Amino acid sequence: MNLQKFKVSDILAKKRDGGVLTEEEIDFFVGGLTTGAIQDVQTGALLMAIYLKGMTDLETATLTKAMLHSGKIFQWPDDIRNLIVDKHSTGGVGDKISLILGPALAACGLKVPMISGRGLGFTGGTIDKLESIPGFRVLLSQQEAMSAIENVGCFIMAQTADIVPADKILYASRDVTATVDCPPLITASILSKKASESLSALLLDLKCGSAAFIQDLATAQSFARLMVKVGTELGIKTAVAITRMDCPLGRKIGNALEVEESLDTLKGRGPSDIEELVVIEGGILLHIAGIVSCRSDGEERIRGSLYDGTALRTFRDMMTAQGVAPEIAASLCCTDDSTYGALPKARRTTDLRYSGPGDYVHAIDALVLALVSGELGAARTVIGGPVNHAVGLEVLTPPGSKISAGTPWIRVYHDEGQLSESHADRLQSALTVHDSKNEAKNGRNCSQILEVIY
Image (tube, rainbow, N blue to C red; front, side):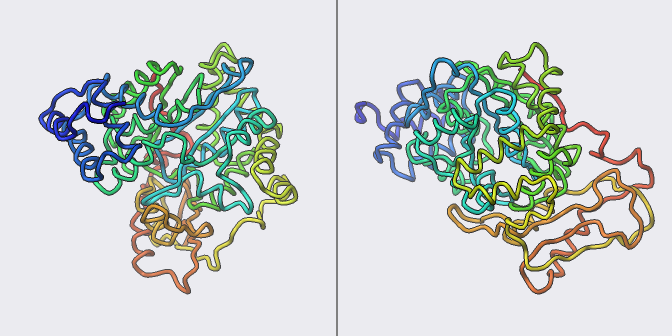
């Protein structure tokens, strides 16, 4: 590529003024990112211009392809190519679906090469959660990844330096330039990484609600259609499930705590909202991958894998394939043990009690819980910073539950001597009760799925 063909300042000015960048201009800029020819200030300037002026669908698809081809792309044997699928979530509070769904899909015959991320801000990422398991290796060579797909059916690994390197540069710049919540940039970031896995089918879980970056359904629908269009142009059968994110998913928030709840679900005893998402999203993937003739048949197969032990055994095999000692993997997957002694434990717990009259839990503000959990150490505040795998929260009375004065409604796992008054007050403010069970929001009878777009 001739990096002198365009002037970077001309590209910046064009997008600043609302112009449409050509394929050559986008390829030139992305190529310059990976060679170091583009300065950090220029990267930030283009990101802000895109954030303010947007991109056409064609520009977004072109940017995605340019980022994809900045690094290595997985190549699978012909006999399994049509079985390669993945799922990605835009991130939610208590969202541990990937840890359960990957093994469940593999147990149903699909191959799941899942490249996931670490969390930044108020939530931990999938990789942070898995790193709470002693010995779990999240960095795999391509040979190790291929072996895991062949012998286990799935892996969950972190993005390595040679997988979409342009995305790593842009992601870091987006974080420090306040351009994270930009649909074209999010689409290009997600789909370039997923396309590097050479997928046949992809399910995107798009969170919508007060604790998500998209808070209204109309915006979520527009974003979902963009993701489906770009994914399809990349040759990937793509579906988007728009799901609720007002109350936390499941009951546990925090890295090791979410591994515990994932294992509970793989043992057939997880929270109903977690099981619902796993079953429906798995059913969608089995259907669009052509394994079953309809989504409901796929849902039954996924549900069956959670109750017959095959998904749990696949998770155990994935752990050992990624470095976990067999005795630790076996102890975590023992159906008679729910203490999970191999996982990190917080030094202290504090239960907060409800102080009002007897009523039903209407809602729990997921964003408040996520922020407090992050401040306790469950999430990082800077890229590369540490996380405390042991700390977090456990909701004891989920929405729809009966609650009365003095009832413990949330348990805080922390390492400090005493929970701060500020954290306690903020957590208490997150609880809303109503005098009617029918008013309960996001309770057990309320579906997590708002819409599925193909």
